[in-house]
Amino acid sequence: MVGTTLRNKGAEDSYNMLRALRGEIPTTPIREAVMPYAKEFSLRKDHYKIDFPRSNDRGRPNQGRGMLYGLKSDPSEATDVWDNHPAVIRELTRLREKYHDDGRSVPLR
Image (cartoon, rainbow, N blue to C red; front, side, top):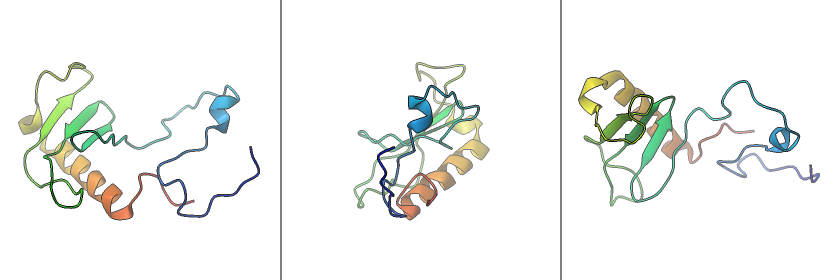
């Protein structure tokens, strides 16, 4: 759009918005998951959101029990379902570690 090419490791968590600006509607999500940063490490994928335990170690979340919410049936995040979904916990924990180790949440260009 502006004629600039990003280097391979530039804009670590960004996506090209040109399609949206043109009014094109994607048929699939552009992100595998969303990892917002606030007071805690969280990750949202599909209809689950996980809050990981806080950390004092250079930004990496602690291991251990966090909280998991099923947003489809509980959009207000009132009920922790951590103990009911060990496979979801493993998948989201693996994804969080990948994002941390890669230093980005999108693939290299």
